[in-house]
Length: 100
Length: 360
Length: 136
Image (cartoon, rainbow over all chains, first blue to last red; front, side, top):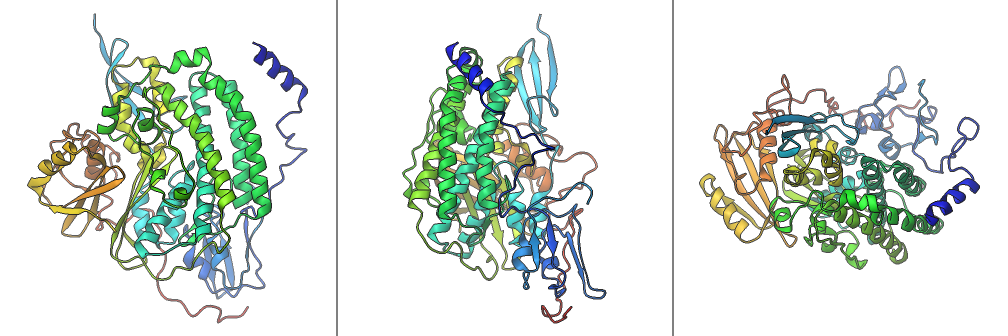
């Protein structure tokens, strides 16, 4: 009983644990694996990422030069980032937004 | 008058986090036979593993389970390393222990919360999951993801824990440990909770051994069985102490999980303290040879087995997964026989069912 | 590397498993592996963290005697093997009639090598030109 009253008072006086979401957004820590993107100027279209992608989400063609990522297949594992010889694939901190 | 009828429990039921059906043959209020019906989320994962490259399979193995994902990739990597005779650096072993133990804490907090929810203690459920959130934050900050960590690789790990991060982890663990006693008291010492759990779903020791129960279910029945004692990864250097119950009922299973939370906290602290300096991974070249291996590891739910067979190419010949819940299903059927229908949710949740890894 | 593997024949299964049960071994699991003309069946047992394996080579079309009367836990694995690998198992304590893992209308014995995977996109393994030859 005393415990109960104690914890009720503690909860009443302490600030809320939740974030006021639309106004305050949660800060993502450095190094979060989020949306996969490419710096297309550096890309040599070698296709290493396409060959290694575990979920076949990537499509690379040389002629015409294109690099396409299917965000619905992508599992954000980060394997393409590792194998890219030019290190031009990057992971943004934020995640895919629903209207990709 | 005895009336016999069959009640399908599940596949969709408020207490079940994942779909599994239990056919309960009832005699009035008593269950006289229980049969499982699985296959609602069978994904054919073993077949995909044969078609993919053995390095791509690390990501696949990680996605077998959404709760203990790191342990699956760790077990797969340990199996392939044994197959290809790769020695990984000591630091990588310690890092693996740290992440595996954070996973164990978060998995145990999750199931304790679900158990609290199953017997209608919603306040406790939310507060346990609030603590779990701090553990998830540790994982997010150190690896870049909350549950599917993606840091285990063949030959080591991909990310390092810097001294600043290690300070941060110790701080967070301190905060977590401060909150635990109050919650665990209400879980283990509360009158109504005790009434709900003590003597429910008893699994005697000899029966647990015969039915091949693993993990907290077996340990609560008094079987001394925890693969961490064999000292895989860095557990050999960390003076690990096993938690064993004796009664084998739902209360003891809960108690084993609660005590394991503290063991895991101690293991993380010890690993952070004793972690040697050095590289975190070695390069691995070639393909798995035509040989076979049975990799084993202690998961939050028990012993996880991967049978890996290579054939000299980059694809695997066979990859079979035996998850702890699959081994605990016969024990669940035994516990259900003879119990009341109202006890089924508590018993079912107490073996910590993880159905999607059971069906793969 | 599997240590302590003993190769046994089909009719030795129940006696060998019975011996292991008497020795206090715990049933871990069974593995079935498609080897073309035959199935490779492995029984895994554990005692004090020491594994012991029994290997049986089962020609196609032969029925495997069930050990579910000795170890009830083997029942689920045997049913799973029957569904996924098409192995006939005789004398199971409970037979799910091939509906344990799979539903009606699903492929028969999908884990056998002769069945191509459904919905698995397999990467094109044709060798491509050396990396980085085309400059953008």
